[in-house]
Length: 92
View: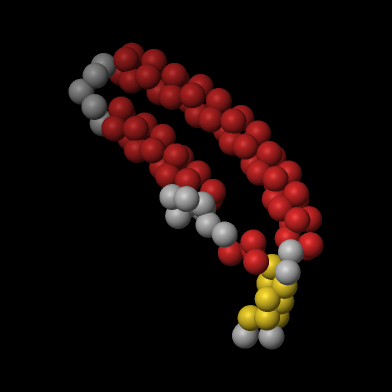
């Protein structure tokens, strides 16, 4: 048997993990980029749109890094709190 704190199995309200959310977000950027590449707009317009998409993607990555850092800090606090929480025995 292993001991697990009560808070370790808590899920996000929407049921998605942070990694799934980030995958969806980056997948959206990739899908949009592909749609632009195969669109009927001119190459000059495609270049402009893709450059703006790249800038937006960089801003999202900066925000993602800030989010993951804050999430790590919050998890540390939760881990500290869960270490003090009652422990349940769970069968392996």
